[in-house]
Image 1 (spheres, helix red, strand yellow):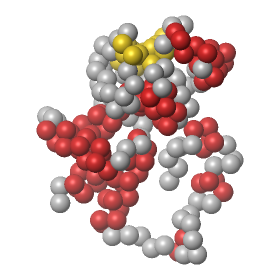
Image 2 (tube, rainbow, N blue to C red):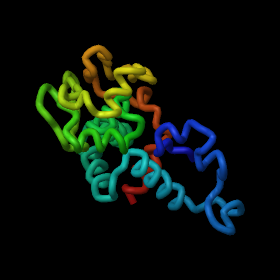
Image 3 (cartoon, rainbow, N blue to C red):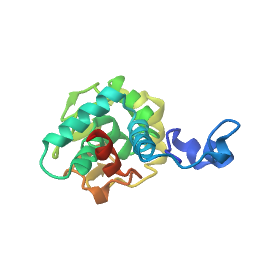
Length: 192
């Protein structure tokens, strides 16, 4: 499955999934369907790689989702979507989540006027994310200013192109999250 981890390269003909849409190796084309456990594990790995998390981080997010009221799978996706690096990606400040993570780590962004360099910082409704004024010399920021934003922000975010900032209007619901992840399989895997 194409996870769009390489940014714009996944939109072109150079994408690895376009060239070879099967697993690597001699037996990649003939791999049989796996067991129930392997399907659940693949779904968890897909979610981890999509959001760029390690196992321990992902497990901690799962335990936070279990403690919250509501459906555990939807809570998990909501927690993952409201990470600072993911919100930066959704606001089109970066081509990929990896680039968004790097922008956060290099202090190019501020939340509510305070500089934040932690990609896992949890964003709440009402928070305003903006690109720092000193970061105007960064190549990606110059490209944003010159060409404009390529994608529209989701409904739960409000983008202000003139000020290079975005505001969180509300927590995302499952309908707002376009990730092709079956969160119920992840919940089943962890509940064993």
